Length: 162
Image (tube, rainbow, N blue to C red; front, side, top):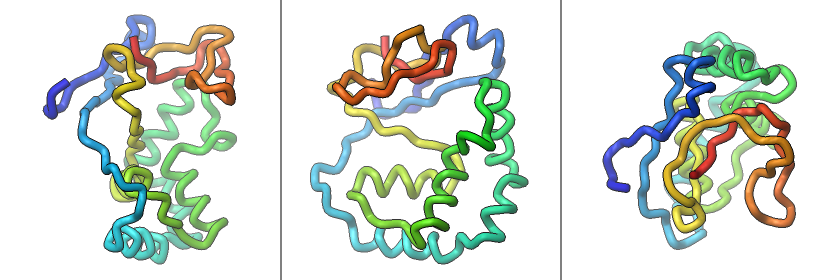
């Protein structure tokens, strides 16, 4: 895959149910070191200091977070039970008191979410087989291939490879 923006595939049944749904895929080199960048840790601290309880409550009314709540409902997920990614990040900050640096890649993914309210997923390109897309989970399917892989309920939307 080249560095240009590319769209992943969308299962035909999913596309009929959720017209306009798309997945943006981009392959980039990940940082090799797991250490945090000092500037990133400062940025995470700055963002954490701006996210207080009132902001967390108002978040649901902002355009992008509100759209993800609507999407969750259309996808059969109750956003009041399973929070959208931005809401989960904000609630996590309120519970823990801040954002701890977890390494360059995890910090970059979190910063992207906090800055845009759009979830970003990082995958190891060596573990992906073929193109990425969106489809419904199959009965008995698990998230990942590890021993501790979590079972996914049949019919839930997943980002999958070929």
